[in-house]
Image (cartoon, rainbow, N blue to C red; front, side, top):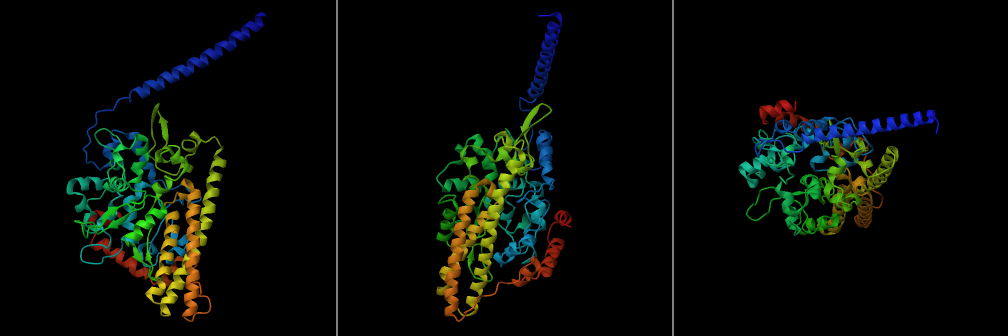
Length: 488
């Protein structure tokens, strides 16, 4: 080998060695940085501490990332940026929820940091119905704040659920945060809401046996689930006690059968008179049907992926759609390009949305036709099976759309549920057609002019100006001073 070749060889070897030494030095530096956080610092946080900023003094990265939930700039096909009015997007919803609070006001979900603002501002917690209180029960605060477990510990669970939501408004001041999911003593994940543990008990399961990985989903399941208020519990009569309808299981038919057996309804539809069910946000139930859940992926893996900053690895508490951060969430497991990943998700969302819209139209027809049947003198016996069909079809539609992430979590299950809802809605309309003919209605009942939210609300008899005036009066005369200022 010539001298020139040897010199080039030595130069190349030197460059490689220097590079490897640099990588080693960087790795040592990072490990030293991580070592500073390898042991839990001495933490002095009260077990009932609800102020997220206090926790933030010990865990600044997690706290700072949580504060980013106030950012509403991200948007995808199903995730609308900002406080988007979904009744404007789809006025059909106004008719589907006629007689229920959601027909007044329904916005797209935003970050956890807005939990208190949303419940304070929505018209669903509107004007006064009696001296000193608003219409909604205190139970409505349950998923909105770490002040809830604090109050439950201080005054008891039953006492917390009692009364109207305005009664405890002065106590609920911190948005969703640290104490909702973490034990102040050891920072371990914990269940702070009794309804989840009680729901597992109803299925014959012990939630205390859950693994750490399961807990990374169960802390989310405290709130992102279907639930109802039970006022008939022996010894607790009249208290709107928060319960999960899981006795028969977590499937859509399981919960439907449970509700039918106890003859529960959230409200009576003001047009069709059907005893309706309002799905809340069954995210955990549908997630449990997903391929991700079956492979051991947790909610936190996708919505709160790990992040490295300054040599420290921590859980990103900017809870958001995985599509906003696919490199840290999706692409840890999936090797597709970002555009391809998002395209796959969007394709499923579009398909499920198309199915949902078609079912919505069928349901609007069914409610309006049922209203016409009552107008023509139909009897309760003639309407009984029709109203149950409407109840079951709309329950399936609502269940499929209310969790927002359903077409990402379990698109095939959502499609199955929507298909069964469409079949039941069609059966209801066939029964209505026969009944209407018997009652002398021999031509189709006209579809209402509900092209805008305002037209739809007028059609179902809502006086929105009056509702807004009542809300303003409620804020001015009833809410505590701090709350009045926060919702101006």
